[in-house]
Length: 340
Image 1 (cartoon, rainbow, N blue to C red):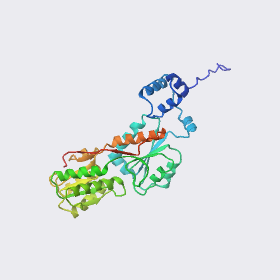
Image 2: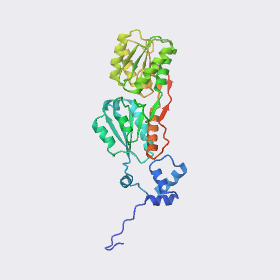
Image 3: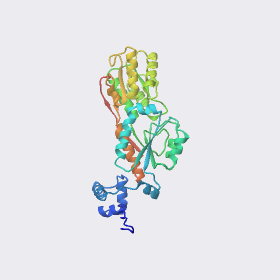
Image 4: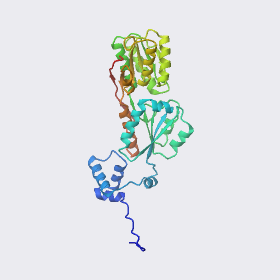
């Protein structure tokens, strides 16, 4: 006891004590605590057992001061808030990201900005309050790639619009657009149009390119095109324009499932049966594909796994891994349902 009869508080277990208990180095314990993939499962088990036995709690504040890191990463979505919460694609991406970050000590900050990120967003990314960022749904003309060219580690969900040595996770959207449109030609449809995504986003450009290649392969015109903005309202307007301009359409490839629900609504409005009069194919294989009255044939992309892979690549980059691959392309495939 100290003078006066006050019992000394036992000192908290340290990183060094955990290392001794697990019979590994202090650096190895640090890697396990930070979720580095460069540690064998056996060592992870031993370190976690030592942490549990000693009741060790990582001191995030002290570690941040010592390492000049924040222990946080940001998910940046340069979109309107209503689109973020209304599109199931984002929910799947976030689920994958959090599933991977839950295995680490990093916290996730969410930043939903407008499609033209403000100076406030840029200041936030450059301020040092986060160690890295994940960016999804970026548009041509925003400044996010410029930030990635600076000191902040960034992993993009989707191919960046401007060339550069950026780390990104994507599907082959050209192939996906080709697969979806080719299915419509293979089932005998002869006047095929598309509701394309926005042309300031690589996904919109690439899926439209896939549509055009499939139409060219089939020897059909690829002139029935209207662009929308990956929203239901945008697809409703675009589908009405398309049907007014090309009334003899018998199939439509739509660049997202959410937009396809708007297309289906317009076809009902116009008295066109699906798939009798008009066959419809979407893109994503999201919950929106099975939520409508007519289950949607669609091009599957592994959105949740894409989010998991994005977070994993960022954690590898933050742990000092110099071999993080830049281009990470996942495959797509067609899922056949009632709409086509």
